[in-house]
Length: 226
Image: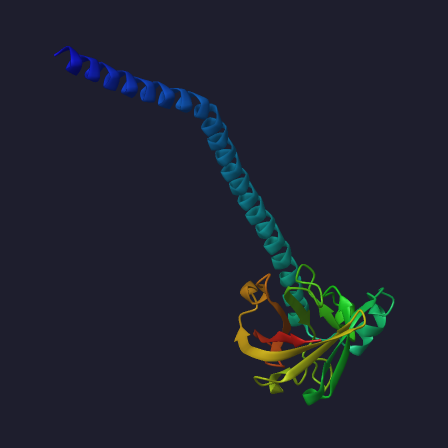
């Protein structure tokens, strides 16, 4: 009997030692786990804050693009200014060229100016402010009047088909794009300016039809090479 009690006592003490070691280990581990959990929660909150901020910035950027697109729509609705008005506007300062758009199929070569203003679009294509810069990731929107004279500005843009080549020359680079989307949309459809930060596309915008335009002709082309 004494032997069994002694054996049980040793077993109990062994279990107690293990339990005490485990408790001690947990006491030692607790502040580490607490700090790890706090850091994890902080990191999660930081990511959430960054996501909310990014969404807010994106909404602001989209709002700004929408404003510029609304102004572009007004300019396209007005059409090309009559000759007398063009002469009056000659005193307005036009933007410096930021590139050249070439479409060999249409025998088209136009300077691209910064900002889709009436003055800039008088004799050139213009990048819509707020969209991606030429040669950078995203969606770079380029607008021009659908001139009444054959071959002038974006008059023949409707002749483009899928796979046609569009070349943008900017900052010493020659960027090649291929047409992959063609559509006619409402003047208020801002979705055509949406872009993927991992892709590089251009969106060509003009009015449709040529006379008494009620819609917008949209030609989008994806970057192929430079």
